[in-house]
Length: 157
Length: 89
Image (cartoon, rainbow over all chains, first blue to last red; front, side, top):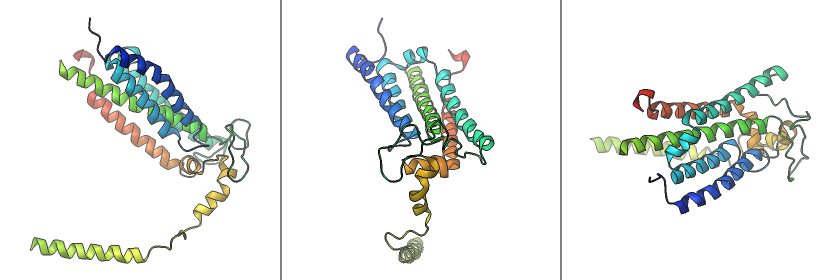
């Protein structure tokens, strides 16, 4: 039985590289309020990791593992989290999307003025919004790649 | 005839470009004080060291919500276009 996807060498290397790229993507998302990057950029990196896995292992295998519904509902959960945090600002503070966590215990530290290395536990709702947008971009872009790969595979038969 | 009209349109457009170029602000003198305000207050108000992120997600949060909506719409369109129905399998 011939397995789809590329040769075993490429599959092994992709399997080794996948967690590293994913960890780099999580780093870019988590440090969005300290270093260049953020939800969109880190999400694009993570989606490229999933695209690499789809190219190496074949779209059918990835679809059996997670499924397009799973990935696209992951994206929808990211969008919902964004809107829920934004509406929470309406109730906890004054306006929609207001930064109600600044000065609080969670993500509430305020860094000193000027250029410094920064505190991870700062930024108010910005890290949470970054995580939400990152979930959205990872889920959305990998769902697009997966669905398109599945469609081209069917056409070949 | 068409070439003459095109040439006249080009000259008018180029004249507008030149005039607007002379109306530009001097280098290093922005038209508003908004950037100074953000540089001075972004760290205190949002707690984020990255001023760009504090603009994108806090001061212009609506814009980011719209971007996320555009992304959602594009992905929903692609999913509708490429999804296989249950009876096709």
